[in-house]
Image (cartoon, rainbow, N blue to C red; front, side, top):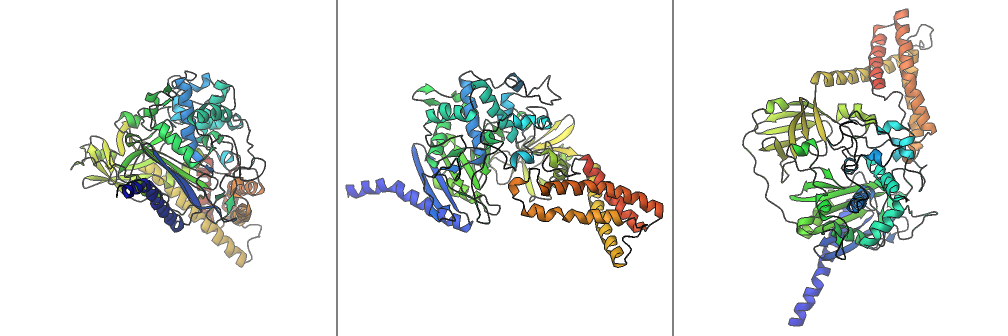
Length: 595
């Protein structure tokens, strides 16, 4: 009987692994994904596994020892490397970046009082934008392309849009700057330095910051193939923003990382990273939202995460053909990592997080008590809000139109409505703190900055906007679309009546330039999406034909008044022209996606 008992005890962990493997395999099939490798840390126990295929074309099975890509989880590793340098006193978090990078000049209105520091880059609070298309969608990057090229090719990427430290705005450029800082401080390529001085001491022997691929000169047979929704395979390619997303690893190595991040920061009883710094990862305290009482946000390479009835620390990532998640619960010394070798727009990746949280039996703390009444001054916060700052400067106009929100009071809650996301409610907790119904702790804070009403969840900050201004932009947008419709309709009518090419036909140029916008479409569709940021024929055509629009409308408008053309033609051209002026002001006409 005793022997049977010990056999059951010995086999129990294996039964647990088999159970989660079966659940993951079922979920992989349901979501039509290719495969995934995973690791679970439960105090001192580590489980790893793999499900699905390594390569859909070859039908090779994915093994738990296979290497994978993790995308933006690379930032967690970069942040850990920076904290190591801080512990060694080779870097200081509060030191302005220009002390290390004298050739990098930020366009910072707050330079005298708030220069960009290492901490700002780590926390995505520098105020610089995320990235440009040419930095992300390009096949021209080389494994050793100098990081300086990211900032010297077009210095406008260094424009600081909000006071450094004031609010979070995700920036791949910021972490690329950190890679450059590491190089300047150590005198080595950041990949070589971190491989030797971070990964090796941690024992992550099967990981590297160096570029590897599934084919070609840098081929690694153990690297799983990437995939997209259409089941097409995608080999790894070099990237310009490599400190922000280039890292190859295994499930077991990520378990080693997770255990270290939840430790006291020592290796073999020697301090490797100051424990105080480790404990600050994922616990933001510096932004305006934090100073107004909110504990959510991002710090030192991890996000505070309140989902599924549990609270933890988190980073996700995606890169060519991959998506990955790292989740930590330091107080319980539990964690999980999963990397899928398919980047799908349709799959429910959150399903896998719920499976692991259930498997780990993560503690579910009680939810904060909700107040029965809203604050007395809540009317001051009702109205329309815009994201400030936006993640991508080029698309600020589109964010303003389609990602603005409306805040309304309803019974004892705030209703948050937007065009692109589902409506949700915020419940009052205490003072200016609110939480979504499915959250454990406060998820939003309301406060005022320079007399502007602000609402923030720690990761997105919304600033109150004049509804008249927003309404006028929407009116311009609607009139512009209506104008183009009228121009095309009148042009088709003129063709039918054989009048389009008459010398006194004012609608001719506006019609032809509007119709010509379809010319770049087949070129864009046939062009690999990875070339979206390059100077290709498709992108040149798009720039040329969008650039001709204002000119043709101007000529058509002048001619319409000279020859006394139809009032409908005048209205169509005028309505389109005003919208094009707005788009030009916002930098969207001509549309230079490669610039």
